[in-house]
Length: 209
Image (cartoon, rainbow, N blue to C red; front, side, top):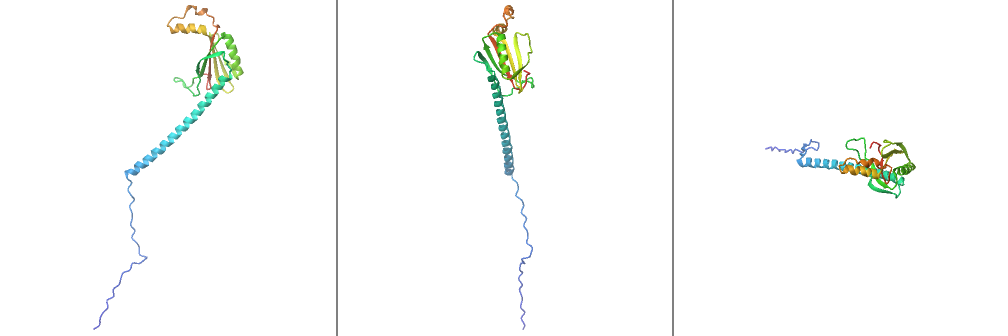
C-alpha cells in the first residue's frame, strides 16, 4: 500500500517584501510650550528695549556733559575776576525747552555784584566779552535803565549781558515786593550809581529767550 508523503511548506518572509510603515503622529503642543515661547519673546523684546534706553541715556548724558563743559568754558574765557562777586549761579548742560514755546530754550545764568558804576561795568565787561571771541549783535532796549547787550561767537554761541544800578533796582523791587506804588523819589536815583547788578546768560541754541 503506497503511502503519500505530505509536504509542509513554510512561508518565508522575503527580504524584499514591503514593510509596513508605522506613521507617528506629531506630539501635541501643550500650553506649556506656548507659555515658554511667549515668555522668551517678551524677555527678548524687553532686553532690546532696555539696551536701547541705556544707550540713549548714555549718549544724552555725554552730550549734556559736552554742552556743560562748553558753557563753563565760555564763562571761564571771560576772565571776570574776583571783583565780580557771584550772587546766583545756574549753569547746566541739558537742553531745557520752554514749556509754552518749544522754539526757545533756557539759558545758563550767573549773576554778580560789581562795585562800580553801570557805565564802567558795561565798558569793562564789553571788552572782556569781545576779547573772548564774541561779536556784538544788538542792543534791544537802548536808553533803558538796564543796559542789555547781545553777542554771538563764530561757533554760534549766544551771550547776553545785562547791567543795572543796584540801588535803583533795589528801590524798585522793594516797592513792588511790599505792594506799594513806585516811590516818588525813584526818578531822583542816578541809574548809573554803583554798585552794579550784572547778569550774564549763555545759550548754545538760540537768542530767543
